[in-house]
Length: 221
Length: 63
View (cartoon, rainbow over the protein chains, first blue to last red):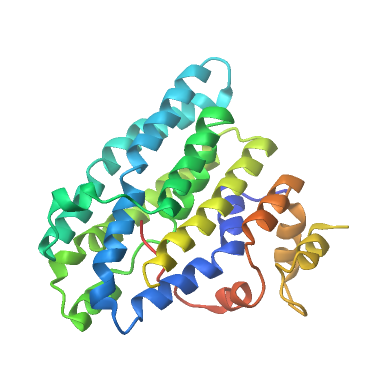
């Protein structure tokens, strides 16, 4: 495709498929029993987020192996080395929120995560280790592509009678994700991406949207 | 068969969906592998997608 940036090309592909994910989000946040469901959502949220930094570290390792051989490796490695510290500890925010709601950290960590979350992370490990680490940029583009609306989540916390502090993970991401989204877009636009890279990022993004939809939908079942 | 036709045949595009020229171009620019992946994950396009084009705000899911 001509005259379209790398980032716009990926974002347009995500836009094609995220209708179901957004519908799942609306169902969740409008649910009449959201107060009961919210801790389950947080548990699933943690199940996904706990793999984010390890996935980025795996992708960074694969980029290091490609330095000097692939033009994309250096730029992607620079992005990951910058982003890993920024994401480190975000899984702890979710555990903090759950503790405020009365769920002990140790109990949450003992619980087996849902297979859908394992499939989501597992797919990315497969792409990173066996195909190309660029796939992870499709995953990150989905996860950080829709920054939370801070006012909406503050109002939601108030509406269901949950302290705003127990929404800290969402509220903090509301402040950080616009920057993260823009950082990724700048990185994508500067990378020497081939058509193959674009196809893999697209497939990774489609799969991420599908599995995230499943993870989120299961919370209300 | 172009991508739009493949996705329609797979039931991923709602019948009578009316897409903009740029969205048609986007769909037809996908590689065979991307289209196969969409069919595999049953990523539905169509009504929701069209409504999203008109939506002013997406709350989304945050992970």
